[in-house]
Length: 403
Image (cartoon, rainbow, N blue to C red; front, side, top):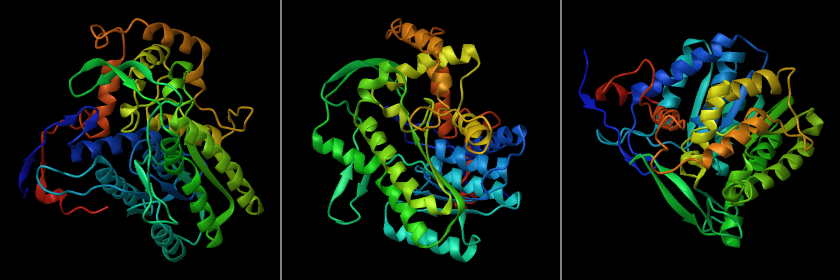
């Protein structure tokens, strides 16, 4: 017997979704699992902890470990539950629930911690769980966190807030408004030194270091333990507002953290890795100034070449072929480079040339891949998902579910 049915409506504020389709999120999980399973089994992690495992690259990492390698998994993420019939929670809330359902059907452990990954209390909760109910040790830690703020662990009165800004200059260019389907000109002023420092505290590698040190001190890291953080370089046309901006400074700091972590885990034959990712559609990437315009040009070129990837495609290839496989692509700084397809010289040349042709009048035509970019954004929130065409959900049913 069905319960109270609630109509699902798409709501946006600029490039931020204000609504979610829980059943679409469930189908998206099933679709990603199917993709991994069709690739077959590989010998990867067996006990994995994903910090930021509820969406995008973190979720994709969790799915490929569970359904590609048969791993038990723990995810730490901060997601909003159902509040009422007009606010059905976040997509990540439902991703955690439906991932757990499918993992447990497959006989796997899938533990979700919903809370602030930056706190010592969360680190202690996870450690206690590993010791008591997760076999005592983990062999993989994925750090995939995109957060707006972080409280100083040494001073609870100080809160650092991350900023997406250029450094040393004001940058002007086109951006996309997904709510209005418009292309508009945007100028972003250069960050102050305080804003740069705060972004490094939030988006750099400080908390990654703290996690590994905490787990190491607790004796829950297995021999041969691996840990990986995701970085991004992208095209020179995006350097001003990413690679050379505040986010780029944070990623540089994360690489320094990786070297510190490597020394920390040498004695357990561990490996600390930085992986440079491909540009993809995520909740974070759609609000990076000017970045969506690069994406709609890049996607067009990569779709024509057959090299375009969604997060699950990208991360499954990373772990299957590079982290645990025999096809690693490593640069002169020791970073894994699954972004090589994006960085391909011909791909970049065609993307840059296409960007020069984009105008407010033609951006939403066959000239670009705006339709793909927008659809991928919708799918993050459970809309326009293949296999899920519902326009309402059983409110009584979904409110009984817990992650």
